[in-house]
Image (tube, rainbow, N blue to C red; front, side, top):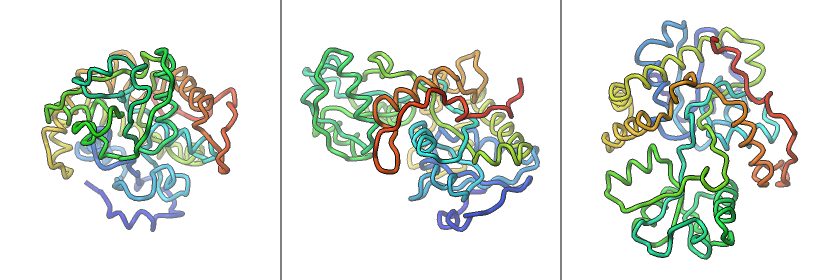
Length: 325
């Protein structure tokens, strides 16, 4: 698989995409969110599309920043990362979404008798990751459950899960298809609340995008790359166990059971496809609803840190004209 050294990403600034060689930056270390890209690479779907695809591993530079700067042709982006960059003026366009429903959830120790509902989180300690989105999400859940959205926060990053397991904190956020699987493998006693049950819009997640100019200037390249990518994810959805092994064979995973378990949860949970929606299709209503939630919550801000005003329409933020009807 063509995964380039981290240092090479910076050297790609101002490169011009060609019809046969393109690059995509990942949003995080290689995981099952990216499985369709790896499958497309290893099953020859990119080759059949006439493309040589370089998959750039996660680095200190966010994938959205690399894309906005023209350092890469495509980027895999978190929902928040894409929407924050786009609202802030980045000339980028979403082409694809991976997860058809929200994979995140709020988790707590199931043996903690003081927590039975989100309202109980008031006054407790949250292990966080440092984004404004987290407070908007948690406060909405507590408030909609009749509680007062006041709680303590310690920023721990990935250390949040160990802190929760040891009782050093009361709750945190996790992704069901990865950290949730890992907690099961470690036999941690955890329970969770689903965001959408307490007023947070159910969102899709994991966007692939490009610079807006590439959509108009090189539509054939965009179509070729995205169609091959769609084939990769479709194959993974139909063959989850085999896809997991392909990812394991082309990555560095200390715990291979985590990859297998993640693909099992993705398959059983219908995350890649709900049975009716084509793999990768962006839902216009859910996209707009989440964007408005982020605006209204004050999460999306300008360069001076001031909350942005809802523009009324974000349909121009994405383009799936490459997708066959």
